[in-house]
Amino acid sequence: MPLMDLTLPQGTLDAEARAALVDELSTVLLRAERAPDTAFFRSITWTHVHELPATDVLAAGRPVDRPIVRLDVTTPEGALSDRRRAELIAEATRVIREAVGLGDDEAMRVWILCHEVREGSWGAGGQVVRFEMLREWAAAERSETATA
Image (tube, rainbow, N blue to C red; front, side):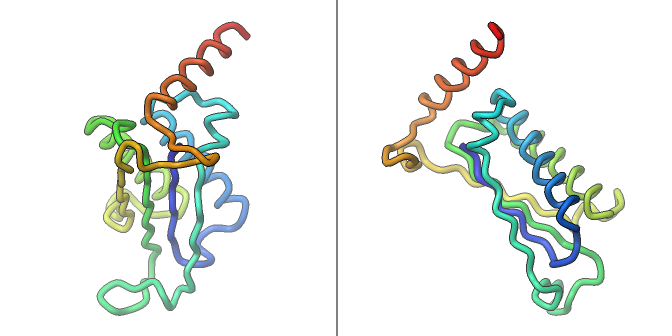
C-alpha cells in the first residue's frame, strides 16, 4: 500500500509523459518492495501528482531554470530494507531524470524522501492494515499468478 507524492514545476511533462512516469515509478516501487506487479498491487499503489506554477518552484529564493523534482514515498514499516530503499532511490532518480530531461550531472535536482508509517498506524477500508496482511495478500497474488 505505498503512496507517492510527485512534485514538479507545471509544464515539465505533458499528460502522456506524466502518465508514463507515474507508471514507471509504480513499477520501480513495487520492485523495490518485492511486491507482485499485479493489477491488485498496482491498484493500491497510489500517486498524487502536484504540479506547481513555475514561479512557486524556487532554489536559492529564485525560480528554477531547470526542473527540480521531489518524490515523497510512504510505505508501511518493514516494506523496505536499507538495501531496497537505496535501490528505490537510485532507480526512481534515474526514471525521473530521464522523464524530465535532466542529465547525469543533474541528479541532485531530484530528491527522493522515504517515509515509513509505523506498524498499526495505516488504515484502509475502515480497518488497520498491518504489514503481515500485505505479505499474505502478496503470497496469495503470487500463488494465483503461478497457477494461471
